[in-house]
Length: 429
Ligand code: PLP
Image (cartoon, rainbow, N blue to C red; front, side, top):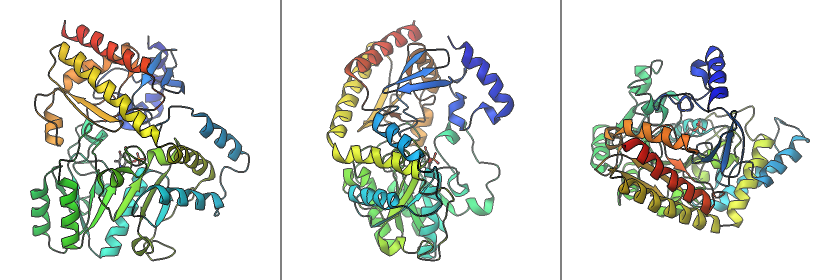
C-alpha cells in the first residue's frame, strides 16, 4: 500500500535530516513511514502509491478552500509570467494590505513576511523595542514558530518529539521567556508580579492549535487584555492558525477582544510561504524604515505569494457564508465522531471551534498542555494508522489540530465517520 513512499523515505533520509523538511511530517510520534504526496485536488490528497485520502490537515491550515483551488492556481500562473520576484514595491502589496486591514479589526498597518515564524519573531522584537522591556510571557504548549525565544515549553513538533529544552537555544535567550499554563490567569498574574515593568508582551494562541485544539476558557482572553492594560504590556494574538479561519477577522472578531499586535501565516498566503504582523499605526510606525526597529526580507511581498493570498482572502471576504458552511460541516463531523467513538466504548474528548477540532483519548477535559500530554497518545497512534489505512489523512500527532476545508462534501464526512467506526472496531477487537 505504501511501497513507493517507503522507497522515497529511504532516499530522503540519506539527504534530508530525518527525511523531511519539517519535523511533524516524519510520523515520529505515530511511527511508520510518512506518505509522500503526488498531487491534490479539493478535499483529497493522492500519494505516490496512488492511494487517495480525505485530507484533515490541509497543509496545516492554509488550504481552507481545498487543494488546487482554481482561482488561486490561475492567478499564480498569470502572475508568474510578469516576474517571480521584483525586490521592489508593487501596487499588489498595497491591495493586499488594504484587503487585510478591511477584514481584520484593530489594525492600521501590516508588514508582510515569509512565514508564521518570522511574523511572531518580528512582532516580539517590535513589542520589545516599543516598550523598552526584554521579557515576555508565552503559554505552555503554544507554538509561535521556531525562533529561539519561542522554543521554551513549545507545542507542535517540539511537544510531539518530547524535547524538553532545545539545544542551541542559549540560557541567556531562554531566561527572558516566561511561561504559564494555558487558561491559567493566576499564573500570569504571578509572573507579572515577580517581574514588575520587565514584561514587554504576552503572546497567546487565542485558540490553541498546537497541543490539539484547546479553547480559551471564558474570561481567559479578557483577563489577559485587562492585565496588559494595567501593566503596560502589549497583547500579541498569534493568529497564524486562527486568522481568516475562525472568522474573516480571526479570533479578535470572534471573541470581540482587541489585541495590540496580531500575527498571521498559513491562509494569508493561499498555500504560498507568507506571514504578516499587524497593529495600530502608533506601534507599527516603529518598524524600519519608518522607525528604528529593524525587520526585512529579500522575498517579502513576493508577487506570486501575494496574488495567491490576495485571491484566497478575497474569496473569503466576499463569501462569509463559507464560515457558516465550515462550521456546519465541523458540527456534523463532531457529532458523527462522538457517536462512532462512544459506540465503540472509547473514552474521548473532542474540542472544536469553527473549522478546527481535535480528538483526545482521555476522561477529563483538555484545557491545557498538561491535560493534553496525559491523554492516551498510544491509542491515538493506533487510531491514526487505522484511519490512514481507510483513506483518511489526520494529523500524525495528538498535539495538532485538525483543519477542515470547505471542499469537504457530505459524502466525505460520512465516509470519515464510517472509517472511524471501522477503525475503532479494528483497534478494540
Ligand atoms: N504560530 C502558530 C500558532 C503556528 O501554528 C505556527 C505553525 O504551525 C507558527 C506560528 C509558525 O508558522 P510557520 O510554520 O509558518 O513558521
